Image (tube, rainbow, N blue to C red):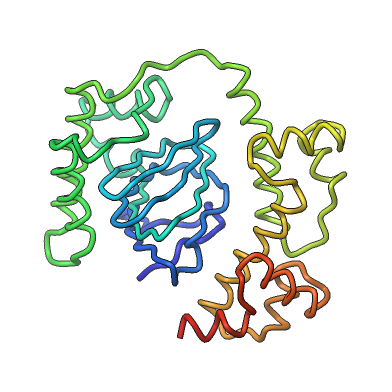
Length: 283
């Protein structure tokens, strides 16, 4: 199993084959999905339960059998409820723009001239057949599986165009401009969560007064900035506890907590268990 990295500047897959498969359940350090964005496209398939998602300013619940398509640059986050899901993250430009014919269609997506629909129910049989084939090819590393994956991706986007499972680009709206102001704030938190971060710093990055920024941030994320910062630090701590040999004290300091007792108290507030119990649960 691979672990999704919170720093979405990471390489997904390899330089020659930039696509990666992830399987996420309750034991995964990123079971809760903090808000982030990345240059790659992402396809999520819900296997069990419900995943409450927010993609930019749109909120919905994805149920077992649903497929979520996340376009490049979209701010997204999610909260699972008894959920198991899998996803594929890939760089469409480096994978599929090899011929003039393909380049024409793929460029419409990468240049945001069209926006692929983001939510497909299990009733879309043709799309589900292709997506199922894609996920199977990514789960089995056999000779020729890369060719099957590439061919399936071409077929997927062919169906998207043929059945017009997209909408044409719309001009920037007040809502989209509002989301753009959030991106540098989330990027700053991602890059500096291990350091001291103040409300004044975050509001300055957004170009707002602290009071207005708190209201603005809460309207999108449904948390106060400091609450989200602590939540994010605890999620990062879960990743460290799951994938490294660092001590509890080292994890606390690396994730922005100068007081280990406060770290343990905060961890329990967000996770319902102590860090020690969390480590025992993941084996």
